[in-house]
Image 1 (cartoon, rainbow, N blue to C red):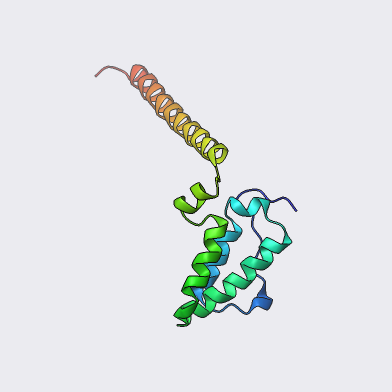
Image 2: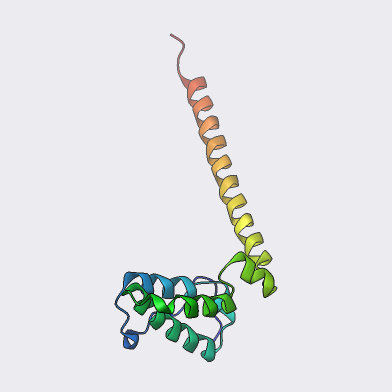
Length: 127
């Protein structure tokens, strides 16, 4: 199953996750660039870890170390990603290109507004 960035799986209701923190955790990881390449075993790990996160948010803080180890293997922090040699340069380039396109569109809008304003001024009769 190949997913595009931001198209992650829905949280399975069967997990019985009840806390908002665990639901955000699932959504964050399910939509992460890393999850584009996950196999079923990786998704199973996310399910287990999400259950641990749910328990953590219910006050069972003893799970913090286990959660940190698991998410570190997925590249949770900049340091983790460097250690794992993960690179999202292509995604960064695509995001930069999209931002540049939006800026260009905004510039075109401003230019069009200026042209229309100048055109309207030239058509107004002199007082």
